[in-house]
Length: 192
Length: 82
Image (cartoon, rainbow over all chains, first blue to last red; front, top):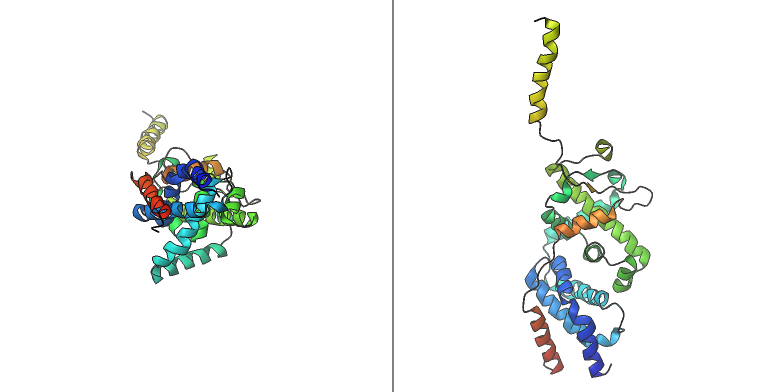
């Protein structure tokens, strides 16, 4: 790609997304300082690799892919997590796989939309595998379609669909426990 | 006053404070439906779930100098310093 084309593509299609990339990375790593560093790295990488981007396509999805790979391949290796935390996460994910969805077929939490679940959601998301968390953030916070996620993450569409379902269920399970303890859960039938 | 005419009043005065003082069984307000459709295994109300997620995971304002720092890094890359 010629230099002026590279500059133009970067300025016109990439740069405007720096805030959303920062937010994505903030949700991935859980703190602002690392998210800012990773955002810088993402944009440096985008500039260097811009030949691999097809101008006029989905710059935001392409940047998310770079950011996610940077987070998993570089950041995760540098910030090795404690064994206990890893064990907890593995146990949590294994627990997900062993449960059916039957318990959540009929679940409403009255008044939940006015309550603050933010800490619980952050905790629940931290327990998801990195790839799964990335998919949930893209799908549920930034409204990427499953097709866009599949393309951006280089995954099969069915894999994205099943991963999204499984990750949402894991979140709901965690939130349901919190909601039951804190606000009470109301069965649909009782609400009429 | 006969017993038959007093009993209904006693019942009412006994019941009213109970109802008035009772805490609602669940908080009032908008309901979050996290039900799963057993057929599709998807959330029944995906839209409300997403609103709930977005309300709780609010937008994080980036550092004010983030864009300037990105551009400074890029200048170094262009200059071959990185």
